[in-house]
Image (cartoon, rainbow, N blue to C red; front, side, top):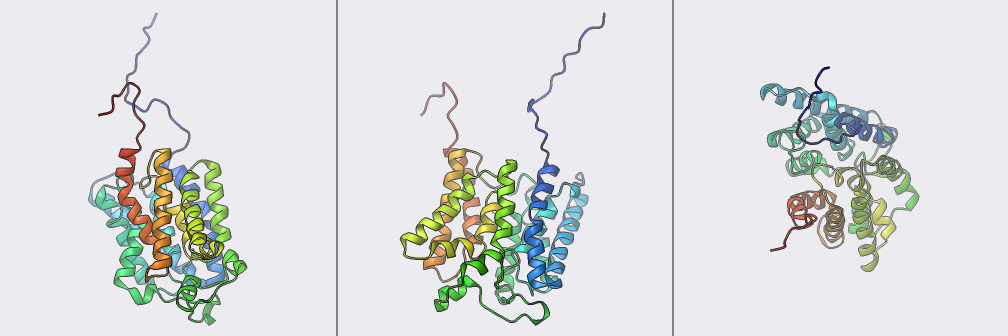
Length: 308
């Protein structure tokens, strides 16, 4: 009779069918409607920006992992997601070399310099966008109405409201027939993708509900149109896809409420009282900085632990 073998391994002992590649590719697929709408409204240039960001992000990650002697993981979909999200935050006429440079910064300074996936404290795509906004402010704030080769320069709905008091109708905001970044235009496509991710369990509803709800409530309190502020700008893209990043958001349920509400508060203050018409970028990056503290002070107390 053979003796049974006792195999001792470290945690985790309970495993899930969901893997990093599966989650990342699912998120990428959920962004396809938004990407397609961007191409539909802004034409071939939008497609080239998306392609440039994705390819550059993947190549940059490959170079970093090759140089560091790490396992090549470019097929896990995380670099693709970074490139896709960055592309959706860019203006439709941004030069392709700037899009590529932003992608290099996003992967290098936003992810790999900290050790790669799982170690980055900030959302990599927003790190890339922050660099581009600081380095190429004119190009990053040049907006065009949809129309392909015949597109004309135009202010975003948020800028038009803030600077001139001109409101954009809800339907145009909802369907995407407006000027703005590639992923800011069609709220419908972002909402559908976000709901799908919540259904799959890849996004905790607490973060987007806290974020969007805070913006809506505060906008109404200060006498502004809450529906306009929900549909305009990058709020939907940021709320469903960037603020909910598993690596840079809190791990506790209470912490996620604090995280979403805090980001909504920062965003509303910037939009309503700041000099800049949009604040999604800053609201998310600032709350990313607070994630370690939120995790620390919302950690459930261990059974039997004495509070000191």
